Image (cartoon, rainbow, N blue to C red; front, side, top):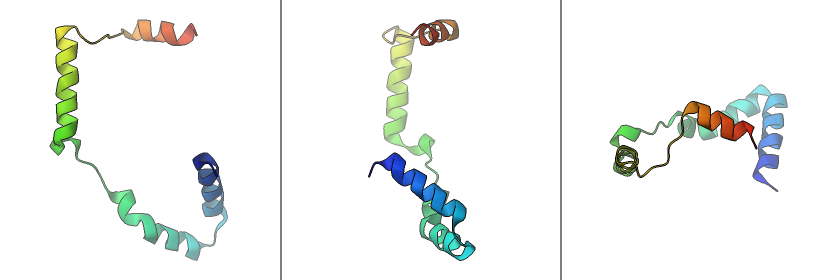
Length: 76
């Protein structure tokens, strides 16, 4: 079964399940729902961000203005 199908079935189940069952499901995933990733203390993220910044500043990165991006999106 594809992930999209599983999500749809779970969504429907949660929408129609008894309160007791919804609370049980929530208890199982509560910790994961509350996890927040602190990107500003993640060395891999900061390294990638700095690499992209340097590419932008040096002209190595191809950048688009908002108008260029909209034109490209709407022309296809």
